[in-house]
Image (cartoon, rainbow, N blue to C red):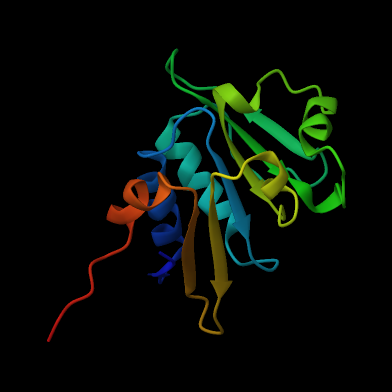
Length: 164
């Protein structure tokens, strides 16, 4: 069930992320793919807003990963990973653990930018969001659920097609 959503503005990208956050739970892994400037970090900012996490959500390229604690106790933290500099690893969970993050995959929502070939080793069940930036600066996000539970969880994010 691959479906695409048009995101005309950066505000729409943030809003899509905020809506997505309403169905995310601790232990979820979300893969953000797309070329430089496609809107991966903008989408992560919207997810962070929806999860109500502390701190500004910025690209973790140079630090590889950031943990954003929830404002409200009992809500999941958000781990934002930029896997661009990790390359091919045989033990991705060990690689994340080696970052010495004080949050674990099991009790956080984990967003991974540039994680193709990496996230698949973390969990069979994950959500892939493929971002495309068009010449007019609009974006399209293609929602690709991996695992039995995701299609129902993300169905409301994709607008129903109008029938003539």
